Every structure is written in C-alpha cells, then in structure tokens.
Length: 122
Image (tube, rainbow, N blue to C red; front, top):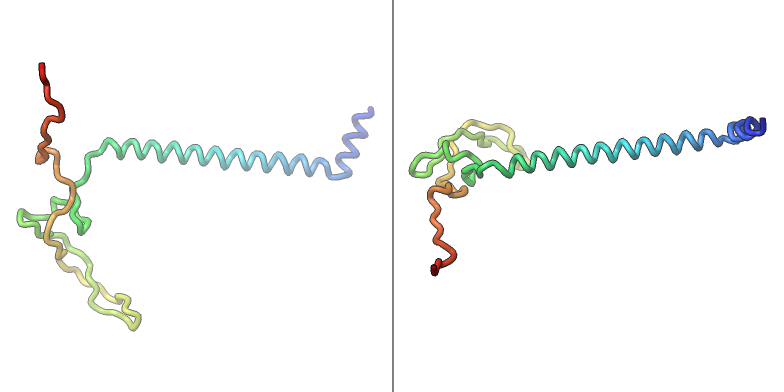
C-alpha cells in the first residue's frame, strides 16, 4: 500500500512528466542516430558502386567525349545569354553550339603504356 502513495506523490509533483520527457528525448535521439547510420550506410554503398565504374571521358566543357569530333570540336548545343539587365544578369538565352576546342578528360587505358618497374634477374 505504501507504493501507491509513492506513485501518487510522483504524479502530483510532476515526476511522471519528467520520466515521459526523458523517455521521449531518448527515443528521439535513438531515432536520429539510427537515421544517421542508415544515411552513412547508403553513402558507403554509393561510394563503392562509384569506385567500380571506369572514369568518364569528359571534356573541360563538361560534355562527353562522344559529343566531340576527331579535331576536338564540340557539337553539343548550349544556352548562351543574349540580353542582360542593369546588374549584368542574363535575361534571355538562345541555343548555340558549344565553343570548346579540345578534349581534356582522362586518357583511356588502351592508350597508356607503362614500362616494367622491376628487373627479373633469374
């Protein structure tokens, strides 16, 4: 019977509110940490998938090598500004040909030659 009085005294003094508040805070923190772990796992998986991909041959103009001809001219259409406001911000754009001239991306492995690093003296 004494424990009923202890429970009533805790209830009257707001002790249950303190317990409930601490439990909610603990559950919220646990949820946030679980979401952070899930996001970290997702980022790790995406990084591993990206690691296994070969590098994309991309020009300095950010277009793929397939958009360039043998002379290095880009054939992609881009938006170029044709009208500006008083703060020199573009107001209107028109389609134009990309004016980059050469490919500066990574060299494909078939074009790279590496000599042997060690001599075999056997």
